Length: 157
Figure (cartoon, rainbow, N blue to C red):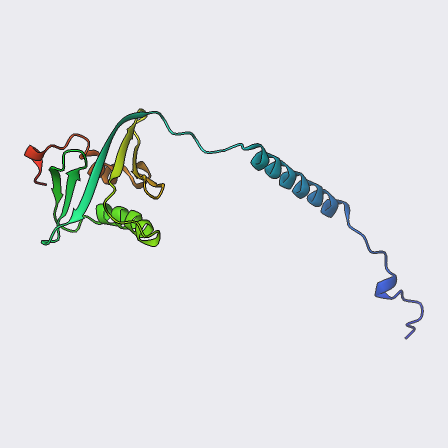
């Protein structure tokens, strides 16, 4: 066995192959493009449609376990949701959690916004949080859509 004639691994030609070099060039180009897009302020999200209507609402748990909804302007109860109401409760819980984290009380109302394209958004002006309700499907968004024109005479649900 002759080990003198075989080149040692450190003596072999070290370098990038052409495919690896092209992959590196493409990755660098993508990183530069993303960086330029972010730096220029380009926002890939679809902008919100104009506001068609909005309503300020207070939500509260009643002693019987129901969720009562009051119009923030008139202080009249406009709806009462009984039973589990999983989507309604989880949506409100998410917004209340952020208020709790920022030490904000429940005094400020939430704002239900209807847009010209039919989408609904529940906003918390005190924290800046928002929940786009249409993302959870039409039946879940309909729970909040019913509050658009709810009046005290139709308060039972």
